[in-house]
Image (tube, rainbow, N blue to C red; front, side, top):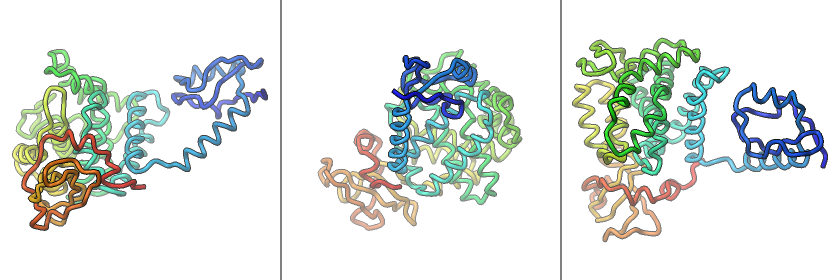
Length: 373
């Protein structure tokens, strides 16, 4: 065994070790996959003098190169973004450059939406009930996506859209775990949980300030995203709100309505859109959200005039006539192959939405979209 002494730039905190760490005699100290938490723990380890088998280093390098060659498809990249957000929010106040990392995360989310906005919407509409504990993360990602699409439709300046995306990603940082528990617990929030929820806009903003966020627009949107123009919101019951906070609030509420919980099923997107429009009193951001998604957005499960059941995969030129992929035959039996249907054609017109999405949830998205790079 040939040992190589480790130096600081070879080891990263909060990431699994790619090889075993040993002492000078070759005895195992830390096993491959162990995670060092914090710079202090790393420095203490290095001060001791630690080593790695050079063959393990070479093997790890080869594995990294092979992994890079097998870059994940677009669905895998959305999943990576989710876990990057998890790391960012759970280490708020500990990261050396929280604001820089948040800025990059928002930029990368926008790039994924730009590559295929229909897939971004599909992921927001089709939500897996097995991931209830991750609701705090998935909700932030999907809300940020909706914010991006609707404010671009309005014509907001790019920098303002970018700030709104950041606000959506971090608005619930103070209740990240609580959101997952509430989604999965199957009973209404307790009084202590309600109290935490009521104060979370202020608490989240305070945590962001402490982490170095200075963008007044982002902080104000986070503080006001549960306020309502009629004064019924919280925590202050304001009636004069910044438009960015209004936009964030609309996207937040819409995504909450179409997201399933253990306590209740998701609302159909059509019903959620009607309620949002009424609540927003026809505001331009509410109208933009509805127009951007269409009547039947990607991810919706619909019945066709042909008798087939289909998943909407692409928005169409008209809000009522998207492109859909049939996943059953005319008798409602699941099929081996999906067939794309243009619902603008009379024989494949949509006759209504199907609220039971159990069949859709069993359908790998790659079967509907292929393997988008």
